[in-house]
Image (cartoon, rainbow, N blue to C red; front, side):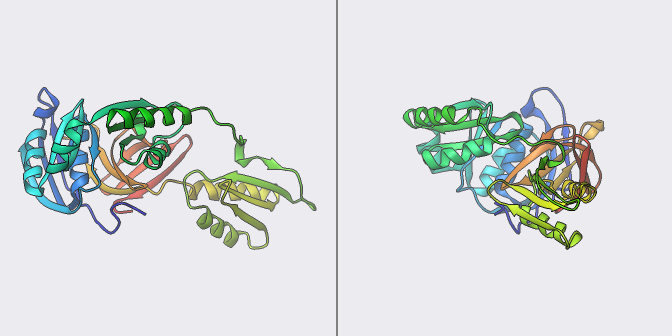
Length: 308
């Protein structure tokens, strides 16, 4: 479930004017019913910080800021919302004042560069084996930031390092590969689903080819089917159209002076500020318009409109 379901963020304008140090940037921005956590997240990323936001940070806020530095904006939002923040080892930590003083100020941080597993998967593992350790997931850099007591961190680190190894598994060829079988010109095929809803994609395929047998293998995350080679090519094209990340565009940010644009993207319960030319979940932001953006992955691309 999306972390901020049913909350609409309208980010109208953000102008970043470079003037030396990061915290000396001048900001103009307007928020309407924006999640407070998102506001801190945006400011932290603009300042170049890692960002850790405690789950207790809830609610929305609306205001207009003009010609403020990042620190001034953080101070104003902190006073307005009642949540406190602290910068520790280039990490912006946001929580209640009590938690900042009692827990976070005394906590230690470690940074784990992951090699083989995704930060999202590693973070989920930490939440199970070490629930008292807080985690920040930086998918773009394949980085996991943990903070907690020394003993908690040592245990969490040992578990992650054991988990972060090359795992064996099935390898799939182009167009999903081929499985022997079939008769009268029919063959059995399979294709992995990497981003989309497998059951939803299956329904679309079944509507397009009602006379053929297709199934969704939830355990293997694959669409399987028995069809002709010509029809399978059409199935692959349909899957590639539908198997894309469910990005929700919550803000399109333009920079002054022709700098690269940025987009606020909500995906799988977390919100990221993605710069034009950079990637999220393996997809690169290649084009930004007034209310529409385009992502690409190799030869594939898809458009997302504001609010999706």
